[in-house]
Image 1 (cartoon, rainbow, N blue to C red):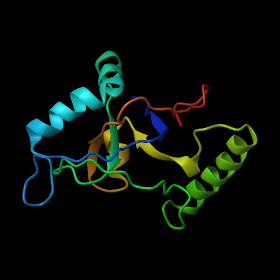
Image 2 (cartoon, helix red, strand yellow):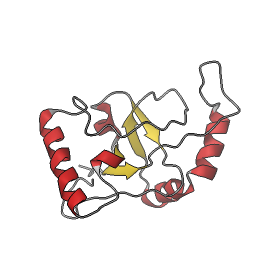
Image 3 (tube, rainbow, N blue to C red):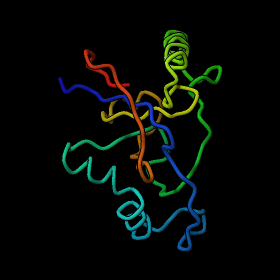
Length: 142
């Protein structure tokens, strides 16, 4: 079984003003690909070398640039056991002055089937440099 990378990322998405959109506000595919290549170069390089891309639940048929506020700690965002884990992780990381915490980031996974558990999977591409964290001795990276 392939191990899944689950990452907390700060600045997962960034707002950009697209000039080439369809009637629903989606970027045209060619525009989206150009933006990914130029504005998400760190993630593109990582994807090329690791052969992993990141997924989130979302609309896999749209190409949009969004900047949602962190919602990991929002009530009802995750099942109770996961919510308790993220609450404990938040406390532990805050005590260590970590910049990446559940309250400042988003969850992305490298396994499409895991993203499917939360809705239709869509790839996501962090814009610019991004920060993440994981636990070394775990099959899951956080």
